[in-house]
Every structure is written in C-alpha cells, then in structure tokens.
Length: 192
Image (cartoon, rainbow, N blue to C red; front, side, top):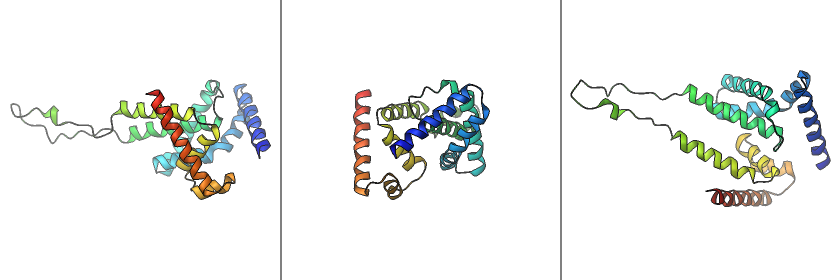
C-alpha cells in the first residue's frame, strides 16, 4: 500500500509540475482527482448544492491561479482543502452579513440609538486566531494523522469506515485520535 501511495504522490507531483508549465490537461486530471472531496467539504460547510458547486469552482480557479505558490510542504489535496474551506467561510460571510436593526432608533433627545446596535457573530479576530493556532498545531502532526482528521471532520467518514480503510481496529483508531489531540494540545500550549 505504501508503494501505491508513493506512486500516487509521484504522479500527482508530475501533474502539478506539468500544470505549472502551462499544461491545462494536467490540471484537468488534478481536478478530476480532487473535485469529489472538494464538493463534499463545500457541501458540509455551505449546506447548499449550488453554493457548494460554486465554491468548488472558486477553489479550483484560485488553485490554478496560485499553483506556483504551492510549496509542497503538505499534500496537494491538503492545500486544496484549505483553499476550499477558506473560500466557503468567506462565502458564508458574504451570504450572511451583519443585519442591523433600525427598530431601536429613537427621536432626538431620547437615547443614543448607536448603543443598541450589536453584532451577534463571534469576534472575527478571535476566530482568526483560533484558526491560525489550530493550523499551526496541525502542521506539527504527521501527515497520516492530518489526513485522518480531514476524513473524519470534513469528509464525514465514520470511525468504523476509517478504521476499516486503514486496516486497524476501532480501539487502535480511537487511541490514535486521542494521541493526536494530546499532541495538538501540547503544541498549542507551546505556541501560546
């Protein structure tokens, strides 16, 4: 299985290099390899088929335009998933902007209406920091653990399906998940 993964990684790297050289057919092959997972992730976040399809298109366009920026420190699929998640989150912000209620406006001399305006969304700075800290903690994990979390959290695999796929028992999978969480917590403590 390791040889097959190495061959897949080599073939994918070759397609990336060909795409960088201007070969659009190579990018089309990368698209066919990764579009189903990108759609699945997009649908999980956006919960709408049309929005998910648009998100996949935006993700692929952004990836194509920035393929020279792919440094290869992670798998290409991980890079694509990150773009897809970021694009979906930006789309959600555009689709669900802050709504201000003008019901609280009063006549001059009564109360200050501005004090009644609030934003019920979570603090964007906190969200950004949490996202960056989580990404930093993920970078310290081995690739197979990152892939495991992506399959569970983003692609919706059950623990049983994942255990069967990678050929381990359920208790062994749960142990790996627990160990990965401990490692991430330790990395977060070291960062903060």
